[in-house]
Amino acid sequence: MNSSLNNPISIGNINGISPTSEWLKKYNINLTMQNNQCSNCNIHGMCPMCAGWNYKSEGAVNIRNTNICWIYRAGVLISSYYWNKMYIQNNINKRIPVLLNKEIALQIIPENELKLLMQLAK
Ligand code: SF4
Image 1: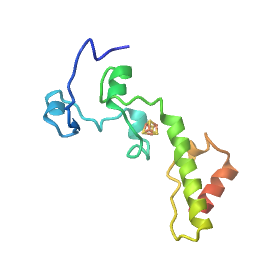
Image 2 (image 1 turned 60 degrees about the vertical axis):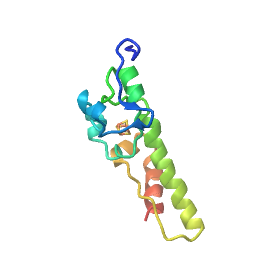
Image 3 (image 1 turned 60 degrees about the horizontal axis):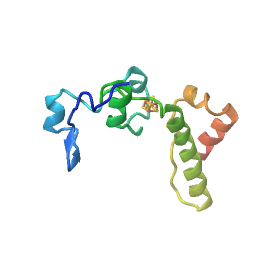
Image 4 (image 1 turned 90 degrees about the horizontal axis):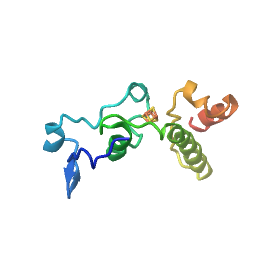
């Protein structure tokens, strides 16, 4: 595994990391770059990413480590269920859509549970 200690790289300063910073431009780094799996994912805009862990595990800050993938996808389904149940029980006219693709959701939960989530989201 690569270590940043062997090849130091600066992507920010004491004020934090900025995607438009001169440091990132200098090293030609785009923090929004993703692998193919993530490029085709419809929740990639919500999925958290750690540039430091990307560098540690993948050797580059702009190659997204996908270890979080399945637990994050499950969390998206759980959030939809929780918030929609809460809105319904409290008579709040608001709903959270089920954001995962059907094919991916069915790898996590059975079809009858996905139908329930879709009904709650209406
Ligand atoms: S959920 Fe998985 S595929 Fe989607 S952006 Fe996150 S890591 Fe990538």
